[in-house]
Length: 385
Image: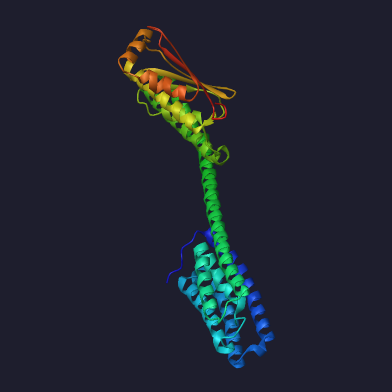
């Protein structure tokens, strides 16, 4: 039977638990031997009792060796371990008779119980404890308060140890995932620095020289500029990934806007803002991104696919201000009211409605022949709202 394939971090936790169990097995075995020698007069068949005790000692040594290697921790091994513990309990009838008070193995059976708890968590611990308790009570001619206490300890101990073992494994797995994510982010950041030091500088040079030369070189320079913008956006996204563990549910608004600014074909979107990250709540970034999408769609519909749009971001304490401006023909304010009355709610709902949901303000400045400018101001997060 093949052993389980575990995450290395989870396997390390199990290794440490089994090393602690190995030490506990030694203590339990020493206790079993000492108590049985002290109660030697209770045996009706002392030679058989000594043979059983010796076999249990050898079994302890074998189990310590077997559980030391993860590949040997198979369900078959755990089944045999528990079966020996159950057989040791039943053997008490042969060496002491039905009138006995203390079983031969005593608390030695806890070794198999805890192995099940480590392997199969609280369910395994509870199941093994139940089987041991049923057998222990079934071989007795009467049940005392002490017997009940022992059964209660087995049931509670197996469940708690199993639960704690499962929790430790889950914590180790989560930590391993976080460490791998941090290592990946660090490597990507290193690659991003290499891109910034090499590729971005070359693209900027091509863009500048293309504009100077004009003609076909100018088109080449424009394409180089688009690629430079896209690469800078990826680098900024990597900065957010590297710091995600510290920022919680916040994200960089500039990254979201850069993603919206690139890949727009002939539509020229110019983004300006603070040099540092502008951290806002994820929901705020998502809604502002949707508002900008609607504004850009309106520019394409009413100004043209070759139009220019300017996005400007500003930090105002616990508020973030965003303006979207184009140089199109502008809008007659009467048209907005007419569109609302006709059921066309793009401005009313997609733009003003989203900003209102964020407890922000939306100011539209426009006139025929003067373009359109939206000015949005919204709180950064729920606390600011």
